[in-house]
Image (cartoon, rainbow, N blue to C red):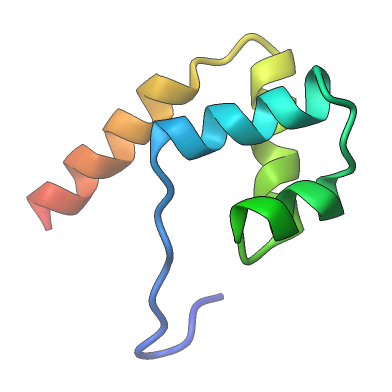
Length: 72
């Protein structure tokens, strides 16, 4: 549940892909990746990695969020 006045940090596709690459190819821990890329929440990186491994397109989800933001 979001709190009134709470803002969300949005990450570029480049940051998402770099996080996934560091976990998958460099075998870095989620915690290390969040610190290195200055990502607030480790569950966010976990979500990107799971989506990537499931074959979901991170670019598509990024574009959909941007479009939703533009509509508001």
